[in-house]
Amino acid sequence: MIGDYYKQTVSVERYTESVSTVGTPTQAWTVASTILALFVPGGGNQRISSGRDTLFASHRVYCAAGTDVTQKDRIAYSGQKYRIMFIKDPNTLSHHKELFLEQVL
Image 1 (cartoon, rainbow, N blue to C red):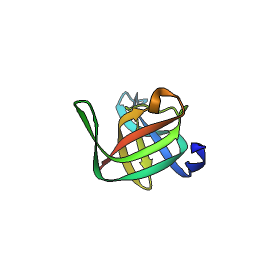
Image 2 (cartoon, helix red, strand yellow; image 1 turned 60 degrees about the horizontal axis):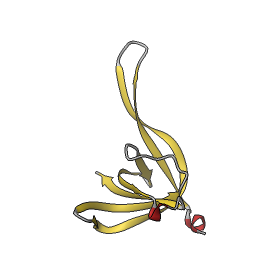
Image 3 (tube, rainbow, N blue to C red; image 1 turned 90 degrees about the vertical axis):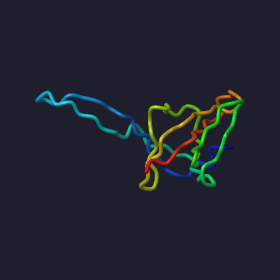
Image 4 (cartoon, helix red, strand yellow; image 1 turned 30 degrees about the vertical axis):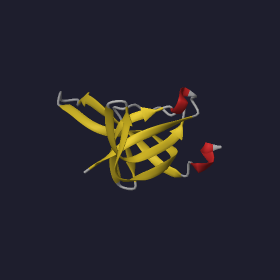
Protein backbone atom coordinates (compact mmCIF):
# COMPACT_ATOMS: atom_id res chain seq x y z
CA MET A 1 0.00 0.00 0.00
CA ILE A 2 1.30 3.46 -0.89
CA GLY A 3 0.60 4.75 2.62
CA ASP A 4 3.45 2.56 3.87
CA TYR A 5 5.85 4.96 2.14
CA TYR A 6 4.56 8.06 3.96
CA LYS A 7 7.37 8.40 6.50
CA GLN A 8 8.25 12.11 6.41
CA THR A 9 6.34 14.69 8.43
CA VAL A 10 5.58 17.83 6.45
CA SER A 11 3.56 20.91 7.38
CA VAL A 12 0.82 22.36 5.23
CA GLU A 13 0.89 26.13 5.71
CA ARG A 14 -2.05 28.35 4.86
CA TYR A 15 -1.95 32.10 4.23
CA THR A 16 -4.20 34.03 6.59
CA GLU A 17 -5.21 37.65 6.87
CA SER A 18 -6.71 39.18 9.97
CA VAL A 19 -7.14 42.50 11.72
CA SER A 20 -5.56 43.08 15.11
CA THR A 21 -7.49 44.51 18.04
CA VAL A 22 -6.15 47.99 17.17
CA GLY A 23 -7.27 47.66 13.54
CA THR A 24 -3.92 46.83 11.95
CA PRO A 25 -4.12 44.30 9.09
CA THR A 26 -1.94 41.25 9.68
CA GLN A 27 -0.86 38.65 7.14
CA ALA A 28 0.87 35.41 8.05
CA TRP A 29 1.48 31.82 7.02
CA THR A 30 0.14 29.49 9.72
CA VAL A 31 0.38 25.72 10.01
CA ALA A 32 -2.98 24.33 8.88
CA SER A 33 -1.98 20.70 9.40
CA THR A 34 0.93 18.31 9.79
CA ILE A 35 0.78 15.25 7.57
CA LEU A 36 2.74 12.09 6.84
CA ALA A 37 3.97 12.07 3.26
CA LEU A 38 6.65 10.90 0.88
CA PHE A 39 8.88 13.89 0.02
CA VAL A 40 10.87 13.41 -3.19
CA PRO A 41 13.49 15.90 -4.35
CA GLY A 42 13.61 16.32 -8.10
CA GLY A 43 16.71 16.27 -10.22
CA GLY A 44 16.91 20.05 -10.58
CA ASN A 45 13.87 21.58 -12.21
CA GLN A 46 11.82 18.81 -13.76
CA ARG A 47 9.80 19.67 -16.84
CA ILE A 48 6.36 18.11 -16.70
CA SER A 49 4.39 18.53 -19.91
CA SER A 50 0.76 17.97 -20.63
CA GLY A 51 0.00 18.98 -24.16
CA ARG A 52 1.30 22.52 -24.49
CA ASP A 53 1.52 23.35 -20.78
CA THR A 54 4.88 23.04 -19.07
CA LEU A 55 5.45 22.99 -15.34
CA PHE A 56 8.81 23.31 -13.63
CA ALA A 57 8.85 21.44 -10.32
CA SER A 58 11.83 21.06 -8.01
CA HIS A 59 10.21 18.52 -5.65
CA ARG A 60 7.19 16.25 -5.27
CA VAL A 61 5.14 15.22 -2.28
CA TYR A 62 2.91 12.15 -2.27
CA CYS A 63 0.17 12.11 0.37
CA ALA A 64 -3.19 10.54 1.17
CA ALA A 65 -6.09 11.36 -1.14
CA GLY A 66 -8.11 12.94 1.66
CA THR A 67 -5.42 15.45 2.64
CA ASP A 68 -6.76 19.00 2.98
CA VAL A 69 -4.36 20.91 0.72
CA THR A 70 -4.88 23.44 -2.08
CA GLN A 71 -2.64 25.26 -4.54
CA LYS A 72 -2.96 28.37 -2.36
CA ASP A 73 -1.15 26.55 0.48
CA ARG A 74 2.56 25.86 0.80
CA ILE A 75 4.62 23.00 2.20
CA ALA A 76 7.28 23.30 4.91
CA TYR A 77 9.79 20.47 5.24
CA SER A 78 13.21 20.28 6.85
CA GLY A 79 13.45 24.03 7.35
CA GLN A 80 12.58 24.88 3.73
CA LYS A 81 9.39 26.30 2.17
CA TYR A 82 7.83 25.10 -1.08
CA ARG A 83 5.11 26.65 -3.22
CA ILE A 84 2.51 24.18 -4.51
CA MET A 85 2.48 24.49 -8.30
CA PHE A 86 0.02 21.73 -9.13
CA ILE A 87 -1.97 18.99 -7.38
CA LYS A 88 -2.60 15.77 -9.25
CA ASP A 89 -4.94 12.89 -8.46
CA PRO A 90 -3.40 10.14 -10.62
CA ASN A 91 -5.98 8.52 -12.84
CA THR A 92 -8.65 10.36 -10.78
CA LEU A 93 -8.90 7.30 -8.54
CA SER A 94 -8.69 9.18 -5.21
CA HIS A 95 -5.88 6.80 -4.29
CA HIS A 96 -3.34 9.48 -3.37
CA LYS A 97 -2.34 13.02 -4.27
CA GLU A 98 0.86 14.21 -5.94
CA LEU A 99 1.92 17.74 -5.12
CA PHE A 100 4.36 19.36 -7.53
CA LEU A 101 6.47 21.91 -5.67
CA GLU A 102 8.87 24.74 -6.30
CA GLN A 103 11.28 25.69 -3.55
CA VAL A 104 10.84 29.23 -2.24
CA LEU A 105 14.23 30.85 -1.82
